[in-house]
Length: 504
Ligand SMILES: Cc1cc2nc3c(=O)[nH]c(=O)nc-3n(C[C@H](O)[C@H](O)[C@H](O)COP(=O)(O)OP(=O)(O)OC[C@H]3O[C@@H](n4cnc5c(N)ncnc54)[C@H](O)[C@@H]3O)c2cc1C
Image (cartoon, rainbow, N blue to C red; front, side, top):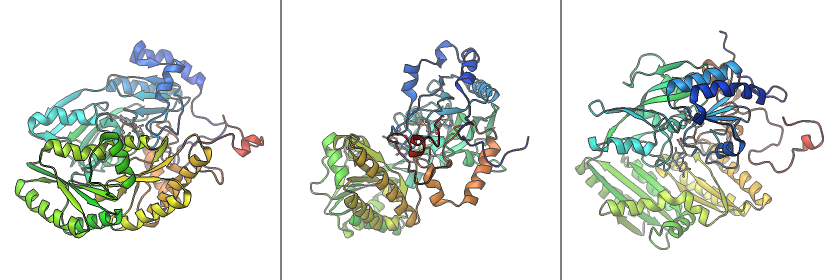
């Protein structure tokens, strides 16, 4: 079959799928997944209308809850046959609208595919289904002295399938790497409904690295139905330090000094004054009073290395201006230090009615300048920004706070959020570190990539999904009308209001 160079774009009058196509699919999907594996009731469908990014909402046409890979393959074949779009969903914790459903499409939810199929401590690998939660893998293998290293802060609920699609990271990815470094084989259902394997579980399969290409493809190249994950030995020793600074600039300087000294901690996380205030209110983490920034540095590895690196990090942290350093004496104190950081996103809900979780990357050395620019932009816009982020990777998570009762504030928060991404690009960084492009940032992609780059990426997408039915409308920018910005639209578009355009 000739593969197109661009997937069919959804243009007015050329929609993918229709409610009639969907209606015709119901008997087929019921036969595949059973009565209780199909949801068509409009009220129940609303449960799935968004992921963790609630600004974008759309009720799916239908939801299926398959229990096996062959059921997923049969569902996809049925969709492909009827030219109905489909979207995979794991736990729905994504923060870029990647699992946003298609109104005339089928949402394939992996929540019932939660088996850990095999654990092989000898070769340090496990085979899991996509709906298994990230933390469940580590819990299942801890009896062998092993753990699954990628640790997004959402690890109690997010699925391994979702982690693969987003190439998720987490606090400890600075040393241990991202999901792509811990996945050696994937069973997938292609967008045409074929069940096949990418990679052979060794991480060294000959030929193109299709596991690497698939990981981070945000559900646009097919649906993962089994994952071979690499397991990591639990480190012999761990120390956790919390260093308090008056300014984020001092904290940023400490990060550069630590990495510059050749030390690679398992994690270096930073929180600024506003995020500390929110975390204190939520979990009473008792960070040093008066801190304008705290740095959490965790070191792990062989006991002797950790001891000497801890001493070196203490010294460097002090030289950068730390006015207090706390070292966790035991696992309970370690958990107390992490409690503030891990609760930070949710805690911000206590100090603001609504907020945007932004995700951008800058080179570590540019952290102080970019943080200064964020605070200047925030003052200029009159919108508060709390910063809590993976400082070691330069992966910023500015939380842009606003009142969602005020359309003006909401619009200003969107503009500020975009301006922060522009700063990241201007400093040689990226519009996303780990939350993906999804639907939320697709319009920002051309700010980083030229038309040729985007066309080349589309060639890969079309090689997997020539019909453009697999998670359409995500990642790549669709034509936008001049002056349009991402975010919730209030009221009709001026062209619709004037009768020159129609929304189907
Ligand atoms: C409080 C909070 C903290 C977070 N912290 C982090 C963090 O530290 N690091 C980080 O990287 N992320 C973080 N996230 C974001 C999110 O948890 C991750 O992106 C996670 O990997 C999403 O997994 P999920 O199962 O919820 O996927 P979903 O949200 O359901 O889906 C995400 C994407 O994956 C696709 N997908 C899902 N399952 C499959 C499948 N089986 N096959 C193919 N595609 C599939 C979907 O189509 C969608 O595009 C956080 C989110 C929250 C709410």
